[in-house]
Image (cartoon, rainbow, N blue to C red; front, side, top):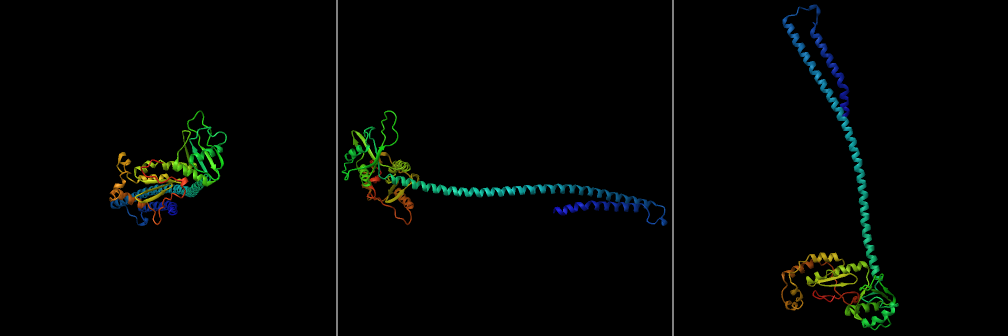
Length: 360
């Protein structure tokens, strides 16, 4: 302990002085006679003994001196070690304070990260709610693509009242009415060959459904040698999701998977009697990546629909068995997979399409 070392240092020097004085006293006694009255003349043996005793005492004194020096050196080492220990304790205390500060900061960072994650989840939820509300507010809108610029004149609503019954071959009773109708976006500079679409908000929702249903069945329409397409109106986020779903159609056809895109952005796929819904294009892409594409050329793909009836009585192949097992693993347990109901909202949905169909 440091306290014992300090006490040893404070008492070692007087002890060395006491030993040194006792050695000198023994040497003096040895050089003189103890009784001067009975002293006799020194003999040769006495002189030799005295010399031997004196040499021994000198050696003892040298050893004492050496030990004293060593003890002094040890005292210096102990002193330096004590100082180093104090400095190390101070450094350790500083490190402990820094570690405590870092732990507190890490706790704050973790709390902020948790709050940020919760806020991100809330933001995603609010964004999805906002997109849903925007899509619902656009349910009575239709978009007309391909109508040349300035064809509508000054009154867009009157122009649409005159052409929509002709295009769709529908008898509107009561007559079709609009809340508003206009071109979308600023006018393109120069003589652009791509006209801006017209967006129209109808007063009655059932008329909107009739127009969109006719557009699904009979579109595109012809107007003065122009192809006119009529589509539903969605928010930007929903349009992006629909485009991403439609970009996966070639892979779905290659894998001979039936599919359908429904309102607002839900891809329904089915194969080997197992169906599944996808609301995120990335999930559908990952799901398609899990299937190994069958080796077939373009000729066999184009003729697969014609030859499909010849294999109806055959047993399924190994690849079909593996695909069926994989689809059953993706099927949610305890839940019944949804079935396609074409009558649910035919005006804003795409009818089920076979893998070799190019009608979409």
